[in-house]
Length: 336
Image (cartoon, rainbow, N blue to C red; front, top):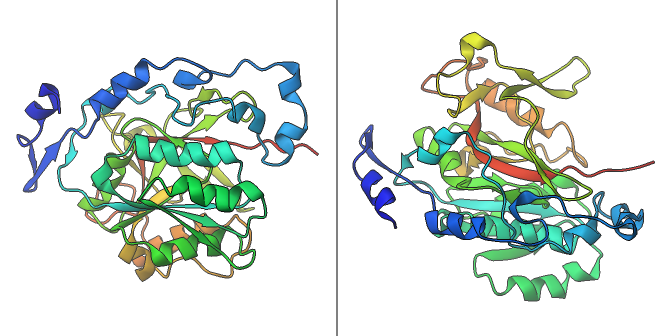
């Protein structure tokens, strides 16, 4: 630990809890020195041969390009400058990271796992649970098991038939051992210090569901792109389409890096206290494929809170977006 971190740790108290700087400064410096294809989140320079339709057909993104980028690639720190000096509780819960997948590309899945391991304080990761929803690609069978055997915290579960996203997530959650469950998709990359701010909100109140700011990995050249627009709350229209709407000026925080509350979450990536997740009833196992699950969890939280949606700082929070917790995700492209 460098002198900067030692100076900050143990000197700040918050409701009796000591706070600390969780940044791994050495790892950040090493990432800044990395060069090569896709490093620092830069686009990969593609040739015409790498733009062929087959590259997108199986996964919805260019797997040929993904395979040419390091599994440990560096990303730019795009957070608000205030995030760099944020302190979080010294004592945080650990988490089980649940990653469901079905016929995921080799390099995209592995990069997700490497990213979580590389950018998370080891003591905060109880385990990473890869849940295979009946994949039939050979690289996701023994080859994947042999590869993950080198990582003691990673285990693989497999469904016995195609279950869909929700029941696959539920399977992972049912065996989780961490204090917190963190759901991720199988083609993500965690950014700098992504985990402590997420867990800090739950440490402060176990009835918080915390969602990250989700940036974009281009499906074509794998360049890192920041989320469009400033912080926005989740919402939906009368046709139940999820959308993001601006936070009214009177509800914005004085510090732009502070978390904010939202009545609805996107649903793909979030963290929740494991016991409270089951107190809420988990997911409805009747949900098929994907879509709609974000409303179900959001409405359960609202009911749990007595039918009120929290839009101010209160003792009991509904859903929270964490502005110092960034994850980039590939948004697949599907042509007709």
